[in-house]
Image 1: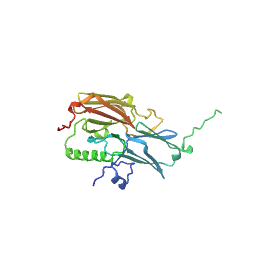
Image 2 (image 1 turned 90 degrees about the horizontal axis):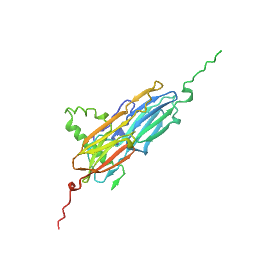
Image 3 (image 1 turned 120 degrees about the vertical axis):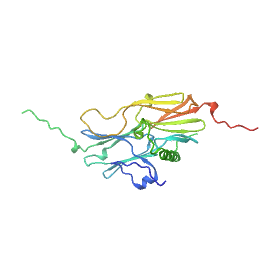
Image 4 (image 1 turned 90 degrees about the vertical axis):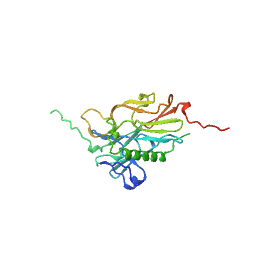
Length: 131
Length: 146
């Protein structure tokens, strides 16, 4: 295949080498921040827990997963909206985030990642005492 | 009969098919309801065997018990609802809101030779797979020469 089929968006980081190997799709995400953490949800339909990989290297968080579908023998595809057998997306983490405390859950094809902030980065409420 | 191995060739085949369709249809005006293919939820792949049509609906984050699936005269409908996990208050900052939320309904016209009484539905990792058998008398048959 001469052309590759990779969608890149800001925040996405797929190397050309990887891209040539397997067509890769960018999973859709929701990301929110509250006082104590950042939470990310990613749609990864067809990705099992075993084929999901979440990596933190330096300040880069990468989510990768392979799609596997049960298929009858001799099936001939006739229409496809999901074409890439792999999902990948990377994010840059700021230093106030505690990468050691990341919690991940995969349920019904949705990944939920919670990245806590370091204690010192969490806002503190200062109580004003009545004088 | 059913393999759970990673179907690399299958995806290549889907990919090839889509390229062909893209090439064929690029430049043509798209149907008004199908313009935003990228945002369609759920995405659907379809395959066939001599005995059945197989539909894969990518429905991450939806409880399969709450999916409404009907097949009537060759028209398959998949409907349901997915709620957003983003809380509606000003205590949070939202950085990305790309995932579909709300009610959905997709209707696909399949061939009419399918048997609505012979549908196998399975759900795994956010993918609903429907295997719909063709009506027995319409399946290709090998004629034995005696």
